[in-house]
Length: 83
Image (cartoon, one colour):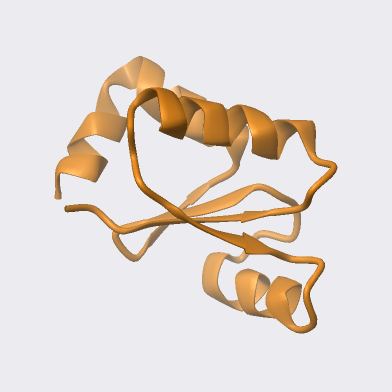
């Protein structure tokens, strides 16, 4: 089973869209709200990204919502999730 973490905020429409894709694919994920103390700093250290959402799939930082949908369009998302 794959390990997916998504860093979000409660008011981010791109976060909602990324979670919808994962939900539609029935992917289980851990959500980290970066409004919590130190969460955004930890996210940036891990992913290099400063905006949300940021996704980590099986230990690999994969970017945000646009990158997630790009992976889906290219068929690469299923490959990443299969590892």
